[in-house]
Length: 447
Image 1: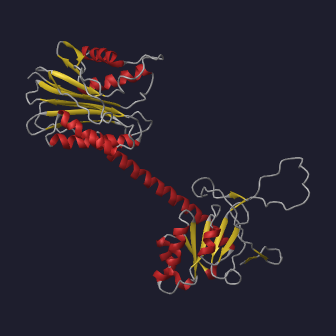
Image 2 (image 1 turned 30 degrees about the vertical axis):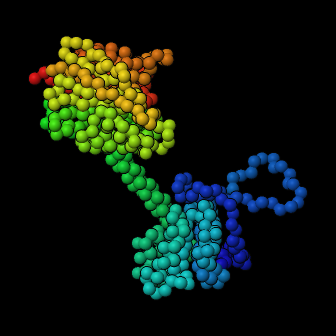
Image 3 (image 1 turned 180 degrees about the horizontal axis):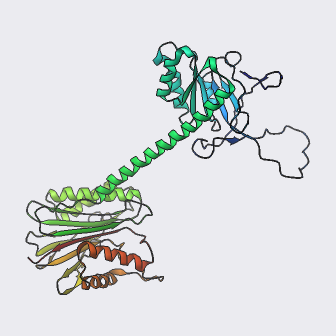
């Protein structure tokens, strides 16, 4: 194909370079112009150094024309972009050449719908366009056809082209405007697609979060439930901590809290799997060592590597609410508070190892007396591993017990107690806690 240069000069034949370009598509960011790489000088003496820095190279758009006879069929007039720079042209006779010339610096593709292989049938005529769209998913695409074929031109836009042009009306001004419009429309389409993709990802994260932070199944129980959860990763919705509470048909209330080592999305997903497995096994009637042994099998199958383990604390509260069975798998012991008495930790001697550490481990179940009125707090180590001030000292379990007792003396209970505790732990740490934090509070009144 030839492109006249104006001023009465003879048309010069366009070469078809295949330069190596950077991999970043130009439509993803930045203005729709690229620097023209200067040609590599041939052999000869080295030029003298310039006394001042050379001016920046001209910028221009690049158009790839795909039509069957570049030598004499279609003549593309000389076109200028909005800044007056000449738009660079490349030509291809078929899709094979187009694939070779479709480097990242190409901004727009102009496809002649009369290429060989496109017939009068609309579906057959748009087959080449669909191939081009698959070949250049991030490039703007214009189609060229005759005015008598307006219906197929409109269908091309519905298929995915940014605009269409009629061959008989083609001139430099119209083509220049169409290219700029197509490039900007494609950029807008990509931005809209990314926005929709981000919304879908946010919805998926929200669904995962709902799975990680379940609704307790306590219908028919007189226990009150409260919980707080904060992921340790910046701007994350999910963490490796997990918890759940269910009431089985015999009236027993089962509560659990756990922590998968690590803070990434894989650990968060594993935490969701363990929580769901715990709920299913609990509703199926498993408890204590049998339940934890089965959960360890689930962990060993689902974990991404053998180094991953999980700590767990399970509590099953009798239907009368006065007694509970406690199992600890490498997890901190719960804290219990009763009216008129300071909060303290439940016994944690003879606890078992974390899940995933020992293949044939056992987890003894310990019976504890709760009394008539009480509050039982289950938590992960993210609450107690925060620092106190700028030193290396950590809050620890003893510091947490003192903190809870101060809030109880102020009359705080339920949601207010958990919110105040997590807020104070963050304040003592001097900012956000680096580990995930989960806290569950079950309470029972004397009546």
